[in-house]
Length: 432
Length: 157
Ligand SMILES: Cc1cc2nc3c(=O)[nH]c(=O)nc-3n(C[C@H](O)[C@H](O)[C@H](O)COP(=O)(O)O)c2cc1C
Ligand code: SF4
Ligand code: FES
Image 1 (cartoon, protein in one colour):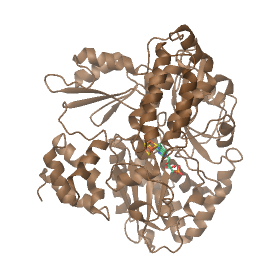
Image 2 (tube, each protein chain N blue to C red; image 1 turned 135 degrees about the vertical axis):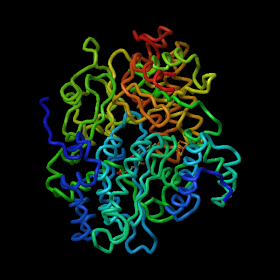
Image 3 (cartoon, rainbow over the protein chains, first blue to last red; image 1 turned 120 degrees about the vertical axis):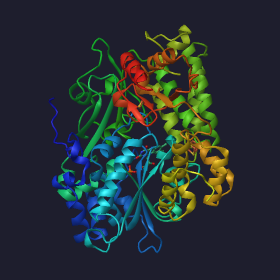
Image 4 (cartoon, rainbow over the protein chains, first blue to last red; image 1 turned 90 degrees about the horizontal axis):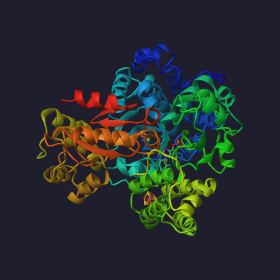
């Protein structure tokens, strides 16, 4: 592999003993937490993370330090930390690795972050299907309590912190931060209208910070290695190490820790060993989880960072990269994802709940060869009817992929209509 | 307390309630607990849970129905859930489903006559790098091939 990078977040991932607290400590663990709690004030930490330019790894890429600074100063209410371990965005499978193989790295990040925002309780919201990772976390939490890294007066300071695992139960929408809060409150997971923002009024109406698992793991290393180390990695606006989860038609799918200066070309052809079937051609790439607009093969020169992908009218999102070769029909792929979104809509807003079914109907008629020439415009119009007209960004997550499939592969959509059948030489349909 | 659980389950209830400042927050962990204990969540248990959490029964019902993992009815001893979202779909999820269908003689949503297996298609399991993937009860099975599926099913008794 020509691309070289010294992994930090995944450094000990191959050591099966890393899940145990003593091994974690032997490998330098909990030093950052001790340092932060004993010698750093919350505002120092917030400034440090601001200076590091760390951006949230859950999908939206919001600056982490800035988010923390929104917690009202001197609030008399309890402050909560909610850890987003829902990992339900198709194509994304990085947080599971971090939790399964190095759970204390996450706990250490939680301890530091709780100090920075003044939280004494943290809930790790983990998707229900991740039964085993949840158990590993429970075990790690128990170990941390035994060492007095959690509980009362942790590390011999006046800080208190309780951490609990809260399991979801199979609903993609719970990854959306306000829906996640409702789910912790024991309600149907309907997203909330913002404002008020959770940092001011979140869990149990108290100030709440929601951060992704990988984001919090980065915090540990920023405290350990410093701001300059973090900002020395990556591109101008995309700093620090990043996990890329690559799936689909590549030889070596998996999770790779890299700087965001990596190009899509190097990621696919170098890191992941190239196309799975070398006789097939690269056709399309979804760069940041299913909600990020699809790219065509001619854009593989792009760097995998926030601004470069934005220039290509897509986004880094969760950095879940789905690679497709020319055996995949783009209409079929769009149907597969739209079916997912239809299934997962919480049903709260009409454009999202009803719109999804319309989109699916039109897409299916195109795939089946029964659509009329102006049905592509009808499809785009239906997308427009959803976009920006819903309570939460799920509406956009559903229509942006469709708009991108049409924009980049319009010829293929038109051929379906012209020949009244799917023109792609494929083994079978993947839509249902 | 009227919610009837195994001894271990009863012990858990108190611990779970202590984690949250508001009782209703214990809803999902307790529903998981009931389902682990009994295999599904009956209407009677939903009513008892509502009493325990001091919420109207409809709140419990609403939550059970919102989340796909909560079941109002019994299913087979082994619940097979095959992911059919994009990354799995382009790497043969549909073949996985066909192999299982044929082997067990059931369709999607069906349960074998001996009550051993129920088959479902589900959305992304968060394991796309090892596609195709299925989950049987609490365990993931990854990088599935036809032989592997047969072997797995034969090993479940
Ligand atoms: C529909 C939807 C699904 C989401 N799913 C996830 C998810 O599975 N995991 C996650 O960390 N963030 C997810 N997010 C983003 C969160 O709302 C939130 O921005 C994030 O957890 C904040 O943490 P970060 O700033 O550390 O990234 C989702 C957002 C939307 C709109
Ligand atoms: S956009 Fe969709 S998922 Fe989001 S609140 Fe509205 S109905 Fe629910
Ligand atoms: S698409 Fe099957 S696990 Fe993600």
